Length: 81
Image (cartoon, rainbow, N blue to C red):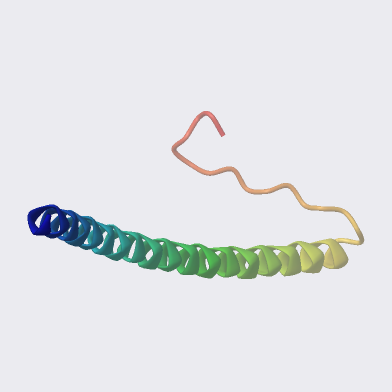
């Protein structure tokens, strides 16, 4: 009878260790996901700042040209533009 208990205890110990490993892997994944989210937030904030700057330039151009948006200069070297 003691050997059945020992086998059950050993089996449980193996399962507990496997669960600990899974938890550690999940925590590592969660940390990487949080880092990715933080990076995405920072990129979004940078994009927002760029858009705000572009809007300021557009508004300045419009106000300097009596409400008419001037033609944008064409980029040289790319015929598709």
